[in-house]
Amino acid sequence: MDLTYSTEQRRFRQEVRSWMEAHVPAEPLSSFDATREGFEAHRAWERTLSEGRWGMVTWPESYGGRGLDLIQWLIFEEEYYRSGAPLRVNQNGIFLLGPTLMEYGTPEQKARFLTAMASGDEVWAQAWSEPQAGSDLAAVKSTAVADGEEYVLKGHKIWSSRAVFADWAFGLFRTDPSSQRHKGLSLIFFPLNAPGVRVQAIPQIDGEKGFAEIFLDDVRVPAFHRLGGEGEGWSICMATAGFERGLMLRSPARFQVAARKLVELYKAHEHEVEASVRDVVMQSWMDAEAYALSIYSTASRLTAGGQIGAEASTNKIFWSEMDIALHKAALSILGARAELLRSAPAAGDIGKWLDGYFFSLAGPIYAGSNEIQRNIIAERMLGLPRS
Image (cartoon, rainbow, N blue to C red; front, side, top):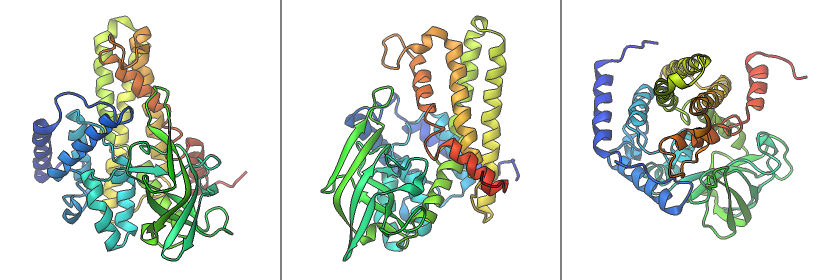
């Protein structure tokens, strides 16, 4: 892997930086999980990105992208986070479902869904977990029964991110009622405003509605909304999980920017904290840089024709635990002031650290719990026997 940027890559970085400086909102947008207004403000930002063809730069131009490679995507992400641009409200679509649809979808499905996804016209939610099938995704019980050219969906999904305000959801359903575990599952899309769909918000620790339960009662969707063949949902789902754990959902730029802010916070309060905090801050910065190098290596391998394998589980464990450690370090520097919520009048920028810490606590759980990831590493990478 060559860590030297080419002239073309440096020119691309400057193009991204100039566009962001001209278009990033001067004031932060309201949270997309708190209110419909905040959600729609982020959707409007997605449309602004799309107008500049920045919605998803790795996608073909025919679907609203630029046809760029993964190294250029990483450069884009670095400039995106450096500029302080809003978080992507459609991350479930563009970072998870989109790449999977690109690989497994029919030309008609790509034409129908990808352009609207890149533009923010249709925002997507995840519908993986169920009350008895969270980390053990193979235990899903929701069903999709074929009826002519349609499927009838029935079941209960939970912890569905963005589902409160989103337009569509994608999830696994059991299309073979006699099947068990990984067999007989299909990946199906459904609109969240369809008859028979009921969405109930799940308040987060900060009171915002980032998750929801989805109840499906005889929801009819066309067979066109099934991705891949019937019963192929597990293998397709694992491809999506690979994107989520190993590359796209948590780009290294997110943590590099947070680590730089942590260093700045430490320098501003160095005289107030114990000397040992310096070591924790340095470790956070080094971990963020190490993760970036690892992802650049993964991107280089994929660009050369490789694939994301079980090692995606090591990435997921690393970034989720790094995120918690980084925010814990910030809270230790701030002391009692760290307890101020983002909405507190005296919080200023302090509240962002507490908000980030709350969110980081979910990292070892979503995208497959870290306990499950350690099982995957033991069995598929190390070849250890089941106990």
